Length: 331
Image 1 (cartoon, rainbow, N blue to C red):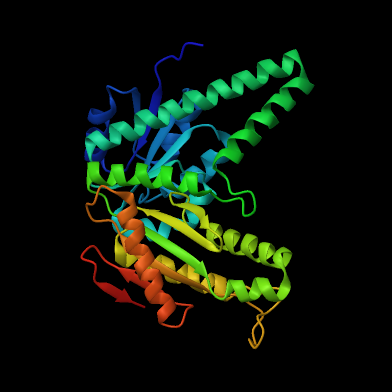
Image 2 (cartoon, one colour; image 1 turned 120 degrees about the vertical axis):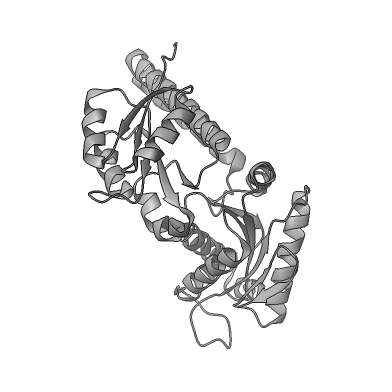
């Protein structure tokens, strides 16, 4: 299947931003521009658009509001939001709702933006091929198509998914950490790592059995996954320990995110309690570390592990963060 030249749509109420984006991306694809969400919707209805970059702050309709409408009518279009760095935390809840591919902070790096768009369009092509293949297989043999698709999906998931908790496994974690460190080295963007350990889990497991312990780990994994951003990565690092890679996140913001995760687990009710504990629940300790410029990912893991050890020594159910200069910021 030969892919024709893509068309992308840029939406921003600031004309200078539109012109700058158009100059950067005109060599990548055919570019349409719109100064409002309403005008953008009209263009989408008349043209085959593959990707849209939309500014978040616009007077008549925000970028998130625009993408909520788009998701219902054109779910396959790749969606990228353009936002100020200070607005990122406010977008966390909305990002998952609109199926955002990525957000880009202002001022953007032209080279990095072109790479992001090129990769997004490759993803669009891949998804289009997959949809076409599925349709062809349906016409050949409905039953065979379902069997092949299910088996392929299952094999892919097993390769990078922890069977118990259904989050990433160690193989997934190290692959993502290597990739994000490489990106941070190339563009100078902040990156942080959280190591999360379930407090007194051995005692909980010994008292109530492995079945109850496994159920608790599943619950905690889902609580953590629910409370991170779609741009972050979570994996079961080993035993009762999890790792969370926070992209575009300096140590201070990582500390805030870690505290949010800690509270979410502490507020969760479990079916059983640890002996001599009044509350039916489990807590977590978190060590957070910011990436500096070491090329070896294991050094970042070691920094986060040392911070986690400090959290355990403080009495557990707390967060300890170490910044770029290896100074501890205690919560």
